[in-house]
Length: 403
Image (cartoon, rainbow, N blue to C red):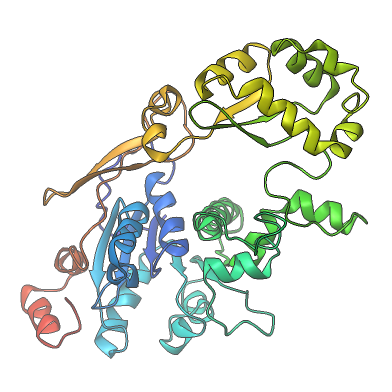
C-alpha cells in the first residue's frame, strides 16, 4: 500500500493501517463509505470545494451529517476547476490506494478526475463511484438522492398504511446502506488487488441499493407471488408477525407466528384456550382473522407496561421489542453495554458523541476516530507533507485555489 508520509494515528494493528483514501464525496453515501475505511484504520483525506461539503450548508441536520460521516478524516479545500487545484488533486491521488466520489453525474469526468482517467494513470487505484441510478440506464444523468431511490425501487410503495399515501422510511436508509455497500466493495477490491496487483472500478447506485434492501420481498414477487402492498404493521402472510401492540406506557412489537411460538405465547399470557380457537388454530387462520387477533393481543397486553411485556414474553422465548424514543434508546442497558456510542474529539476542542462501527473485531474497544474536521483544516499541513513550501501555500491561498 502506498504511503509517502503516514499521518495515521490509529494503532498499526488496525486492518487498513497502510491504506490511503481520497474522499471527494458529499452528504452521506460517499463520505460514509470513506469513514468506514477510516474507522478500520485507513488514512482518509477529504477533498472539499472551497465552500465545503454541501452538507455544511443545509442547516442543523447537515451539520449532523458532517459529524456522523466524516470522523477520522483530514480535510483540504481546493478549487478543482483551476489547473493548480487539479494538480494538487493528482498528487493526492498518486499516493492513494482508493478514490471515492458521489458527486453529481459527470462532475468528476468534467474535471478530468473520473475513474477512466485516474486508473489509466494509476492502475492499482481502486475507484468507487456512488450514483443515484447507475451509469448504464436512461437515468444515468439524473441527480439521485435517497428519497428518489426509495420511491423508484418500490420501497415507498410498501411502506405505510393501506389507506394512506406511500411513506418514506423515517431516516435516509438508502444513503446509509449505499455507504456500507460501497465500503464492502472497496474491501473486496483491496483483497483482489493483493492477488492481481491491479485496482478496480467500482459502482454502487442508490436504486440498486434500495432494491437490495428488499431482497426477500422481491424474490417472492419474482417467484410468482402477488404484488406487495402497504399494510402498515404486521406481515402479509404471517400472524402475529411484526405486530404493534399498545401498552400502558407506549407500544411493543412482537412476532409469534410459528406454531410452537404461538403456543408459548398463549401460555405466557394465560390464554391456552386460544391455541385451539378455530380462528387462530394455524398461521393461515390467524392471517384470515387478523383483525380479531389484534383485538385479542390488545386485550391481553394493554394492562402491562412495555418493559413488563418484554420481560414476560422474553422469558418464554417470544420475539418482542419495546418501541423506544431516541431518549429512551440512550438509556437502554443493551445499547450502553454494546459500546457503540463513542466520543469524538478534535485538536481544536470540538467534541461530541457519535455512533461507532456496528461490529467488533476481537476483544478490543471500538475505534473512536477524531471528530470531523473543519473545512480545509488540514490543507496547509497536507501540502507541506507533499513538498509544498510555505511560499507555495501562501500563493495558492492568495489565488483562491486553497482555503
